[in-house]
Image (tube, rainbow over all chains, first blue to last red; front, side, top):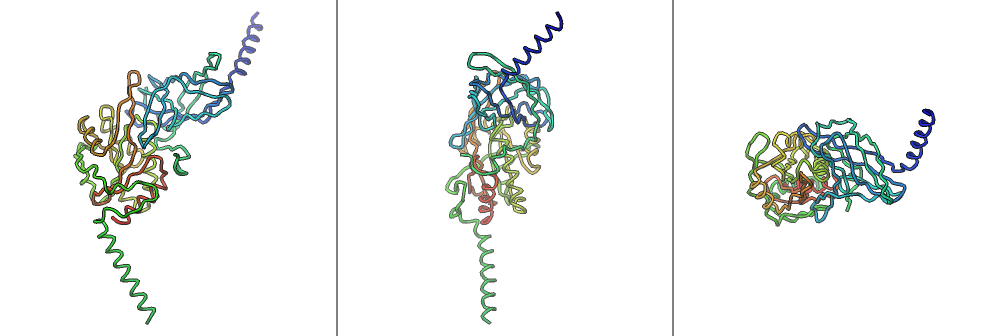
Length: 154
Length: 201
């Protein structure tokens, strides 16, 4: 009986793996100074079917929220959002100047090189939820997204 | 003979030029910037009084002889504040020896959460020469108003984030407002315009 169970489990695991088609690249968090209560997490997410990022969890912070930054007339505005659309096959940038993840009320200081665990909850169009474990490496406080070195973004 | 005359003319010309460099501080306008906005007709930031991490009262006059670049933000800002601070640090390096006269000043719009010591460590993580200033809620509001800086709290559950103007304000070494740098400009673009300000004062 037992081996069959294992087989079933591993088959189930395989099928989960096959349906788990959301790929997360280049996940990082911005390191903090001592006493700084929050920071941001950034990455690129590609889902194979139309989905949305509905939640992010992390043991590094008491509260994790998804926010969106918008720049208009040199005013940077911030809003919490319920979800981030992940259109099929499109790499969606989770970046400081767009959708980003806020780690609020940090448990401790995040130092350069720390591996911060994140769990992404992605929901497909049928309402099926998938959770993806990611380790986001802490980069220096003064890290800049690459394209800032190449001129105006707007 | 001819050659000598030419050389003398050149030397005289250079002398006049350097004289012009000293006297040039008086002219409030006439500079053309490649990327930033000429703010020499605006009167902003003349009266603010805030405090640094040691509690020393600081105002525009405290930076006389330096070229202050002032901008507003808060440490729980994910995007534009660290990007602007990192850009300022890069520009300061790109300016070479002239960069020593650039004084980057970060004013917090969130004095309730940005306590002076943490705020100071935050800006100094970008460059040890950077200065952070804070005040009471009233002083912060008055300073923002003086700079025509918009800001507001955006509630997010139990917490809040902030929206705010992300322009960097550049004054010359006599405290005359010169230049506004948009957050969308690169460090290199900022450097070019900062050197233009420095060329007159």
